[in-house]
Image (cartoon, rainbow, N blue to C red; front, side):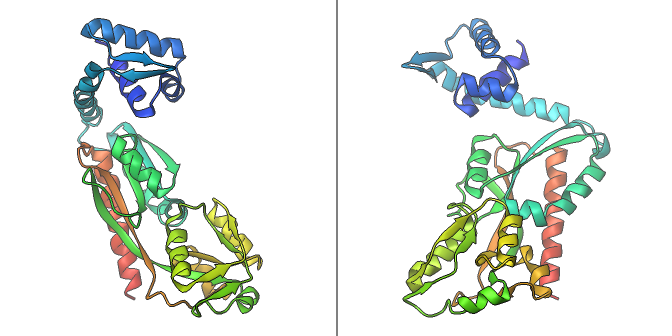
Length: 303
C-alpha cells in the first residue's frame, strides 16, 4: 500500500473536500480521485460517497481514520528517529497568535534553528480560536495562543507561556481627549483601533465597556499590531494591547497608559498540542524552549 494514499485520505478528512486536499497537497483533483480509488480497491471498501454535490465519508471511511492516524504517527516517529537533535529532519507546523509571533517568538525560533538546523518550520499567524480548532483537528503540531478564549477541551495539553499585562494606551495628545474610562454611562469621541472581532484582548476590553456602559464613537479593525501601533502613535485613536507590545513606546513617553477600573488586566499565553499527538524530538525541543522563555518572562516581571 502506498503511504501517499493514506496521507491523501487524511488530508481530505482534515480539509473537508477533495478540492481543498488537492490544493494543500499540490496535486490535481484527478490525482486525488485516482489515489482514493486505488486505496478503496486495496481495502475492498468504499470510503467516500456522493451526497448532492459533496463527497462524504462512508461508515467504512470513518472507521479507517484511527488506523490511518496510527500509521501517520508511526511515520512521524520514523522520520524523527535520529537521536542527535541537530541531525533531526522533519516538518513542524505551528500556529501562533500575531502579537506573540511579533514580540515573544523570534528569539525562540532563532534558538530552535540553532539546535535543529535540518528541521523545517512552518509558521502561521492565526486567530487563537482557529489555532485551538486546528490543534483539535490535528492540522497543527503546536499552537502558541492565549488561553482566555473560554478554555480548551479535553483533547489538548497546554503548557504555560507566561501571564502578560494588558494596557489601554494612546498618544499623549489623544489621551487628553478621552482620559476617563472609569466613569460609567459616557461616550468616547476617539476611535478604538484593534484587531478583528475575535481578538482575545479586544473581547476582554469590550466586555469591560459593556459593564461600564461606555459607548465608543467607532472601531477601526486591523490585523497587524504594527499598523495598530502606528495609528495610535499618530494620534488617530487608542488601543488595548498586551503591554509587551508597547513597552518601548511607553518607556519613551510616545504612548501613555490610560487608567481603567480593571484590576490588573492580564492575559495568559500557552503552548499547546493535541493530547494524542506523539511528541517528536522537534516538538519537545520547541516546547522546552517556550517553557524556558516563560520562566524568563516571569523573572523579568518580578524585577
